[in-house]
Image (cartoon, rainbow, N blue to C red; front, side, top):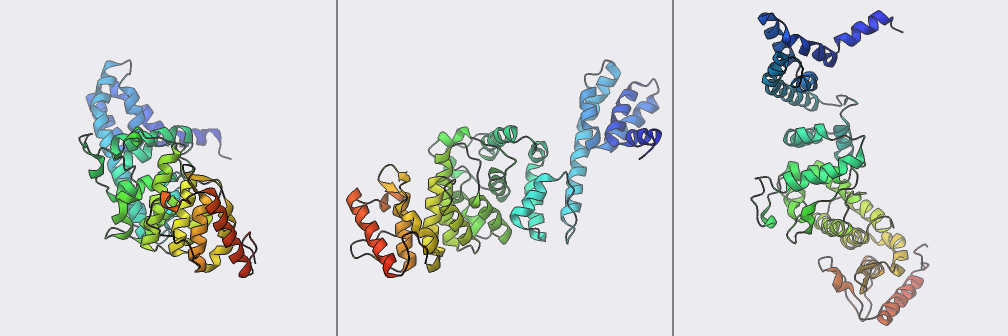
Length: 377
């Protein structure tokens, strides 16, 4: 254990503590001292921002005035150093240790994989959204959620200052889309809502508006892994209807792109009763394209699931039945309803009697394949 005198000396050398002491010296009668102290505060950068900001209301008018004059330069230096430090950290590989206080970066690399390309992808996101990420507190999810929602509404949705009338023309830069996918599924970001979700043209940075980032020229394995992590959830949407529409579209996009990591995530989502019903439906529709015949064993139990999806007309079990039929290579003689591109309404049975009859046929087909109704051999 360090002696008290040594401990005090160490504390005094800490940049934040040093900055606090220097601010008081801005009122020195010596002009040379005031100038020297000002330069040192600028040199401290991020460590001096809070002290200089508070110094603007100092009781000494000279200190307050100098802090007001210094603050922009201190902030600029803080930004310059922060970006320089992040560049240095992320451009070094392999496996440069990530500092403990870089929470968002550590979690991002869990999403995207810790590869050189993933580190550069985070650098792209961080460079664009540095101030927001640095100000978002991972230790306070209840505050982080609303903060994130406001950021989506006021910055991501209106990048040119709210001049966009039709949001369907909204650009979708990769750094914005990846930030949205990453944080809206981050456990340190609590429930959020966006006021713009009430608009009929609201894209919510959903996959439909980010297709190029998954399947196009800007797509990469790292971007797709972040996307798959978002699909896996759990997601922090406050509005389940908006979440369902986005995730349903996302699963269809992922299936069209034939992303290798999709199948296990789709299986997990489809069988998870904690996921929103539309997400489970989207997972089932994706499995109709990327699933395998052996997946029927896990999915067959969902055929009798009566969770409503599209009003009372379409049930989760209806889509599960159509998916199982497709994966098993079986087409009932009187119906062919499975098309991953159709809307949920197109999976509806004309009435409950037809649904019951279809389920009965499926149970008989299972029996013929030596499967129990629950989907187990």
